[in-house]
Image 1 (cartoon, each protein chain N blue to C red):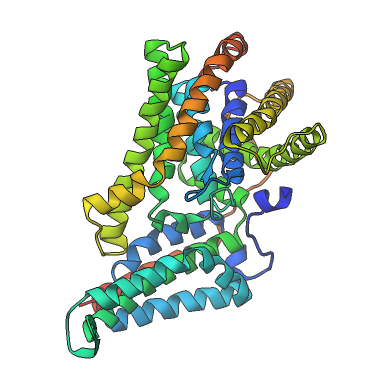
Image 2 (image 1 turned 135 degrees about the vertical axis):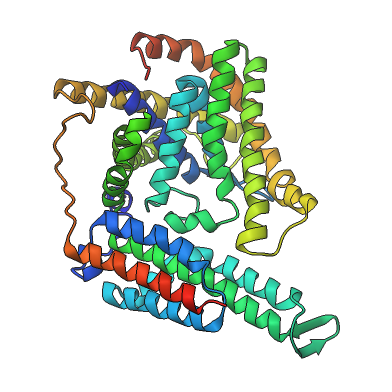
Length: 187
Length: 265
């Protein structure tokens, strides 16, 4: 792995942490900018490095650095919401894979890549929520309840961010690509 | 802020637990996760609780810190307890009020499951209280070293974690600075309609991005200039040493697992 790509991965992991600290107060469900950096990492760094950046973020939190929404530490694994963090890792990979395979350029098509990673994040989140309720807390939710609390309630804000992000990425991408490809960011 | 990232929730002291090798502590926590699920009756839960309390005592960490570590996850424990208490219908009926009925089995199961939670959280809190995130990173790198054979970039991941831990406080500081600078230019971060808020955030993100890419660039150049070329044959500033104490602790955990296995019903 090149030094330059390692530093960039570390930077995007830091972005995810910062995104968690910037909370936008919106009625009903406050949402953070974390998922923005998942899109950015996937789109700008590509599948593998994007995935690594989110993995580094999750590992940092598990190692005890207070980077998650409510602190950090290994006990976070027990939280029913831990699945979303795993979703970040998989989602960044998905996003990068779409961008790499189809070479999206326009905002509308980038939205497609972002939306797919959004779905992956929520899929992981809901599966974990369901599993945690069933085996850790040992009082299973019904599938409908899981979807209501894990998907329908928190999704509108993220969907909005997804749209805004696609527009931003479409503008950043041509400029960043020049920088990143010149420096041969690769494994 | 810099300290809160690199040190995490670390409480400095010179206890036995502090002096343990981070690798031993990580292994201990890892094994403990499975051991917790071995306990399934009162005797095993008492043994497990005693073991955990002894560890807490040995760490000589003020109880207030541990309680603070429990706080964020306490509501889950509470919800779990209440769910089990009201929903399990086993054993004798103890109390009934309208449709709410509390059975003996419910209370018992509620206590067991929430105790399992509490014990697990206590052990992991103990890990983060006696070990800095950097130490944990070093420990994980050393423990996962065999995975290098499978082409998992273990060393790189550990290094990226350390870099990122150092980046976060710098970026936070920068975010604050830019927010103040933009506020001085008339950007309102706390009010306005939604579109105005998005615009405010963009005015924060653009300079933040440019600055941090510059910083990353500088760091990469500095590393290359000093001859960094990956983990191969690299010496370490922070050395890990495995002591007899660590071996002893691991044996103690295995003995505990055996005891629990015999006593469980």
